[in-house]
Image (cartoon, rainbow, N blue to C red; front, side, top):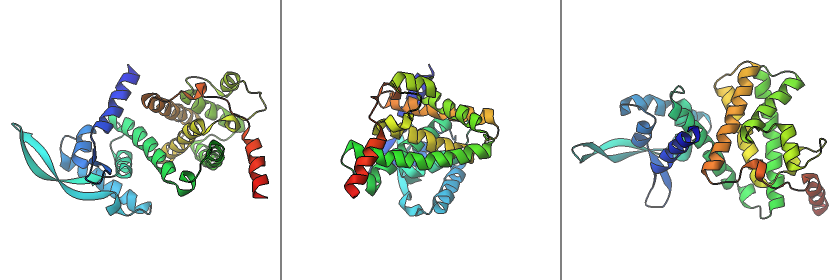
Length: 278
């Protein structure tokens, strides 16, 4: 039932997505406000204003993501009327759901949906990533990204109260269990046919690395954004984010991470890469 509800909610965000005359995707603020269960557009305006401020603080130009437009809106009896609205980019939607009422289930779903989709778009648009041709190059790039973000996740977890190494191992296991359908690190090792001494991340392909990168980045952001405190709450957060990423993969028709093939150690690729550079 939960998956069905989640899938329906995810589909709603896709259903209201529009394309302009140049084929660029966008969302209407009036459509998004209704989906996020704001009874009147005027109540949604303060959320948009906070999102604009967040956009500015992140170093982005507001006009690149928020464009004032006139939208045809039904006003009853089938009649339509032009009303002021805002043309939103995917990033603008992401900022809006981060600043909307978190107690609403649809807002929580929107936060996960736009966070993951925005991250996918960011990676695809990275000049460095789009120039990569081979699977080996993509694996190296994503593995290095994950190393960086795992350090940032560790810092966020520490701020939440996950201090001792054993506690951090438990925290990491919660993220894996959410993403891998209940499998912890030991279970993933067994499923993938890896030895205890082998690092799980070193034997992932680019698709699996990307899924774990989304898990790490979104958990870090959620821990910091919601100022989550306590080991138990941090563990629950990591599990839930992992589970949401898993649901998104399922809804996009992807292969579950535990079913993806085990790749040769990335260390061998790193050695080959160093030889090439020499």
